[in-house]
Image (cartoon, rainbow, N blue to C red):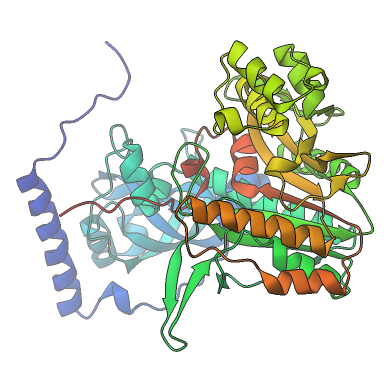
Length: 502
């Protein structure tokens, strides 16, 4: 016979209603007796479960106090065992009637799984070898009015897990590890940049203009000013204003909002980290991002080679660096330099069944980008930097002096996924104004009549932006990578969800 736990039938609606009724009746009785647990304001705990277990040899025989959620209980007449889950793990409690008193023991037996308790006792090891607390006292700190999902067939539906993350964290404690690691990753990125002289800043979330690349913003309304506003889709333009103002190294950990689709690597709100350094260029940003990933991986994960979705990825060896032209030639066997005209490029695309958004009106740069997306991106499993992008899709990057059809821009890819984007920042206000105007005209032709040129940013450039390297990365995708999470929803505590219709 299998020794695996057997699934119990899921409770019927009537059984669930009975459970809810009984729990509320217990709360009413506690309140009538003057023991309303919701009136408790504090419990002086001295230790976390993990600390006790990790340091058992030094703590054996010591008196400690812990607090947490009761997640199991086994009553055996005059003595009982239960497990309590706290912020660091779980520990077993041994509760004996003769030690805590008859009334207290009877009260303990009436409590429910999920209740929050505080307990004081002596650290010991049971005959079965489990580190536990032999209790002197236990009290109820908060009443759980809803039952937890049963351990073996409980909260497995991912939709419910994301909607009720608070329950997910209780019944699937390993989920918490992902978010602890997320916090460590962000801490190490901040430390890395701070140690290199960068200053962390905050810039506005609400914008008066619909600006920025091709992303669609969320629109809102400021009542006092009677003004439509937009949630930011990037932090870039304000950070570059600060470089104009005299800051030489700045970064922002910013919440970004994009009114677009959702999939395994996209959520409408996400966290970006953008950094800008005066008197540097995109080659400096290449070195910076490699050093940062090497530092974070070794510090947080503790090794150079990680496993993501079953694939080993070497995060710390020198990353391959290819121009977009070189990458397309390597993986598609097509040489951009052999296209004499735009028509040649379009004909080549048709010969290779590469779809073009602009079809006959496509330029050589448009075609190169299409070849890259069709033949290259899915091959970039190991960390790879792709640089020198066509000017057609790089409105904020500086043109290459020796080849103005291309810009000093790079993106880096891991596991066939774009992880970040960097430029030698465009600091020519005349060129920038012309690109903004072209961008706005394209949006208006597509039906977006609210797009405008950010004239204030152009004014800032007219005061003089020094040569600057800038880089932006998606924190959530990095956390996905370092926690082996297949979807962005697994690394967001509360991902965007469509409301349940009533």
